Length: 224
Length: 155
Image (tube, rainbow over all chains, first blue to last red; front, side, top):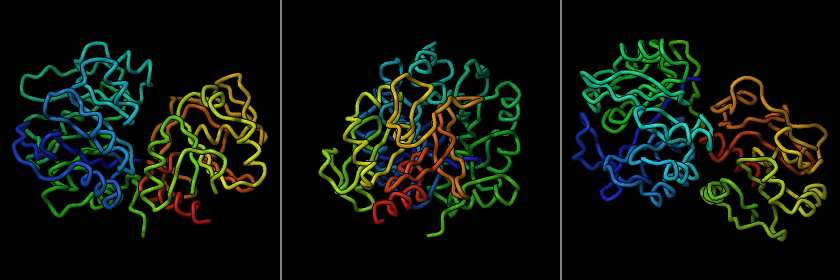
């Protein structure tokens, strides 16, 4: 099944943040409410939360978000040691780590299982591209496409598909359901969208319908 | 009032029950229904529960929802640990073949639910007397999971 994921950028002191090319100036909502809407009403398959502040993770807030969220949660941001990651994994299903973050991902995988560790690849011109791992999943994001809604870096996804067997989460740049279909065609197993769900009429179910029409298995919204 | 045995992700189970309008508290044996959640190690889970009381409740027809390792506990034994299960259902839990843990959304009777497990009794959903056992996590399975929780609670 192809997963349709909502990305939520947070600054615990301010709220849900709109990201654009990794600048985070605009507050657009309240995290718990956002998690409720995305998981309960929009029925995404998973929620990815990034704390953009570089501060240590706000575990209390994460706990409140996860408890209100009806789908699995992955969290990234401010994780520099195994202990912190394992504390987060008592609350969320997965942690997201920069793929260059030392060997701690191995220690985390040993304690919590490989499925709990998502390696994050950040694309920018001149960025070292690689995928050491093994990670449970690989999330690929792009600094210049972040929040721009003009499409994923399909070429990078195609390249990554060749070098890793892990599920790939496409992130950064989705502006339409067609962008999501293109990413899946290139080899992505999941599509994460932030700005598109916040600022356009396109809902996660629109993405699911487009993927379904293109012949991919998805979890279509339950009739109420 | 629903009683929940505290273990693993029981916090999420409490919150899920509250969000569908059910009251829950830590299981004492005096509530109307029991939720047996479970994330983690079979042996640790079996050793953490009052097996005689739980077995008597379920076998006596007490209303129960057994989730994940909680469902596996209904069986006789698991390959994960030498500690015996409750032995209410015949059979054992074996390590899944292929890549474990098996994580993700998989269909059960046409509806997708969220699974994360390395061992399995071979069934995704099972009934015994007044007990419903599910290998997946209804509390993390979106609206479909909540619907299942609500139907169980209402039943």
